[in-house]
Image (cartoon, rainbow, N blue to C red):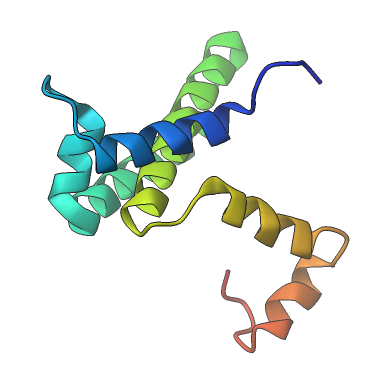
Amino acid sequence: MTDQPNVLHALSDLVADRKANPPAERSYVVSLLLGGTAKINAKITEEAAEVVEAADEPGVEGRAHLVREVADLVFHAVVLLRARDLGWDEVEKELARRFGISGIVEKESRGRPGKA
């Protein structure tokens, strides 16, 4: 672990600030937020497909590409959360709740077997 602040919390806070106080200059985050969940969802779908493609690329460059694509996916997920007035801390709380529970048991507890 490092002494650096959690980058996901910092990113979430930045997106919340852009939502509350859009900057005068062009902002990709603001353009996504203005497009609403339809625009953000489309980007998440695109990025998820790119993650899947990058996952099969071999070697060091394939690994680096996968990391970049997952970062893009997480970024857009953070924007979606903030568009819905949710923070990254809520995702962490849900993951903490699940920690130590079998994934199969956790899914069954939702009453929707086989659905994530």
